Length: 81
Image (cartoon, rainbow, N blue to C red; front, side):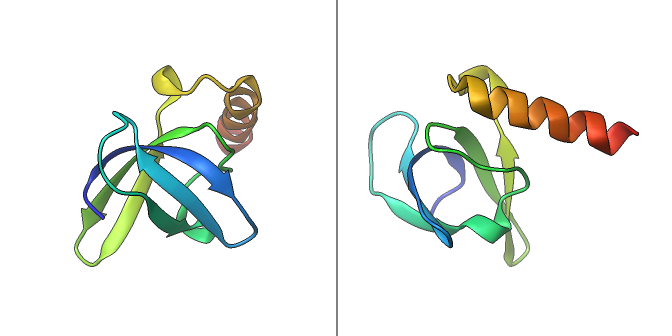
């Protein structure tokens, strides 16, 4: 896996199938537990590596799923309280 933007194509209990957001390249699986947000199919996430650990970030401006936006908003509100 390379650092970059990925779209979540499919999701099961433990893994997500990711494809590069630009549509080019290979598909990768990523552990659902390692995401920093409640991931949904259709989300666009940024993935990079810090040391030996992969980090993720939800890319709101690139994600078209309304339910993902709502879940991310609720999570941020709960974190601020």
